[in-house]
Length: 514
Image 1: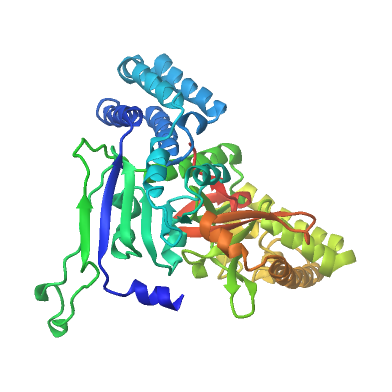
Image 2: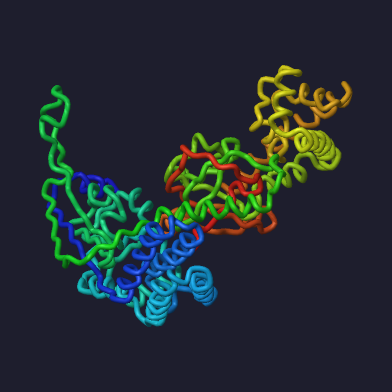
């Protein structure tokens, strides 16, 4: 590792190559989708139904472009039926758009989905197989992790004597290894500045389909005028001894961006939950979006407890810490139960700590929450908040906090005794319920520690090697009745925007729609 770190900062000669893969079927489909989008914006005033159809079809297109399987094997039969359904809805509701785009899109999709080869896979395997030396180290870097089927296909096509390591973009960032050759499957625009500014090989290739933009500019060494007068001797050496080999034919580039597909998926989740929620607003909480590896995301509130997995190399074990959103960082590995995590904490607290008292204590918890929810439904969040703040002088009773108190995740608020008085419980009931909630709260904290400890005992350090390649892993725990957990890598956290999300939708992994 030390030798690799030294190599990383050595000023050896590096070469960057841009390679465009031709596929006329995908190029034609991309042109049509791009024209379809422009027409929706210019002629249909950004019609939401048409944009939704376009987003779905574009999602299918990107899924095909990212896959290494034969194009005919990428999309399921259900997705093929959905493509037909979406195109028919254009025919029935937008005859102008169907005549101009529907028919040609249908033919293009048909042609792509009947193609029994994958031009990207063929190009990569032919390129890699030119090397026939075991000592020649190659890293193949993709945005998302390869499926077992894709990896098996590549391993079959790539010579077994070659030393090829698979990485996702985020795992490659964290690696300190230096290679003879690194191949990014995508353009420099797709991977961003890190891929160009942190070169970890003598030869770095960007391999992409011809329709995607491939602009590449290296930063020049700083000029004195660009920096502070007191730092005139500082220059950038990032791109010294770097040679760019642009052997790419100039073709029309189609501007495509996947970002809006994630936003569209988030919006779809929120619309579905709002349809089902009606006026039951006390089940909503403010949450941020956390993006995960492999086109997935989840909602996390400020109060949500998140388990983070880190390796302890010295002791040969893993550490599981419980944190909140403010301490969560990009590249953290988080552990998520595939059912609601709060229910697991409650189960462990009841079974291992509260035991025979659990039923009685939970009855008291339901009793005060039921009365609070009744008042919220009758008077509204804002009015309940005003009454608690003005009449009972509560300092923590904002509408958002009152809404949180209605949820199961809230057990013993700071001003619970005052809240219970406001809910018309008598003095003895206030003391009884408050003491019971303190007992449940302590049990939940201990249950969280028990879960973390048992997970640490069960998860082995060698899991990180697989995580570096895949970005996520699902495993079943023998300690919690076969409960299923996901370990997911955090790739981005949107702290600037909050969404009103159902309590039951927190920490639930969503897949970006096709």
